[in-house]
Amino acid sequence: LLKYNIFMLKKFAIGLSILILFLLGASISDSGHIDTPKEKIRPGLYEVQSISDGDTIKVRIAGKTETIRLIGIDTPETKDPRVGVQCYGVAASNKMSELVKDKWVRLEADTQSDDRDRYGRLLRYIYLEDETFINEQMVSQGYAFAYTLYPNDKLEKFRGWEAQAKANNRGLWSGCEI
Image (tube, rainbow, N blue to C red; front, side, top):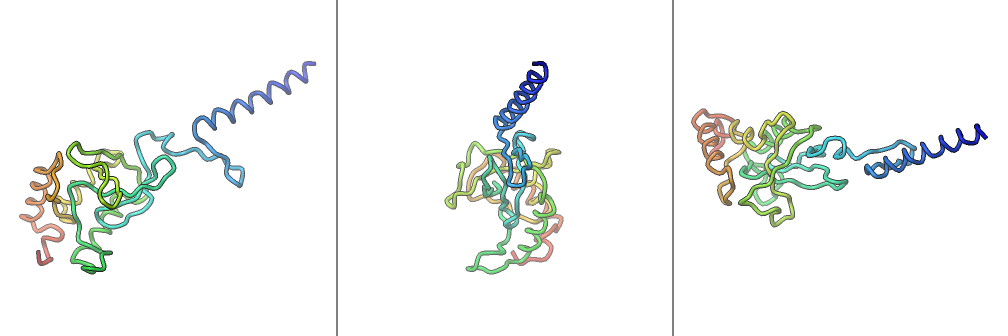
């Protein structure tokens, strides 16, 4: 009877553990490994999946890959067939990769911007875990222009960062015909 009770207790503990993992959003892969969504481990942070170009990245949100267009910045094109690869476009893409590739980011919406653009991309400000503001870094280091076509909460700051980059010949301001 004691062996039976111990057996049933172990069976109950295993079942309870599986239930808890399931409730946390875990799944069991084909190899038998338990996969827990990383959003559950690091709430409010999202892992960067890939870099599309200097002003667009992809992150994983709730198990789905979302394309994020950074608010307030515009980088030279690298993938638009209508204009070809523009001056400093590759450098801007490489800088974005250097800043966020394989990192976790916090996304912040803007009160004056739509949630998504006409291409369905989420419009967001992006911060690293240490609160480095990526949108600012791209403009202040001269890898992006301040995108002033649409209003946003930080528009005047973006204009100021761009003016400083231009005055100091940083990045694209040092060698591109603008």
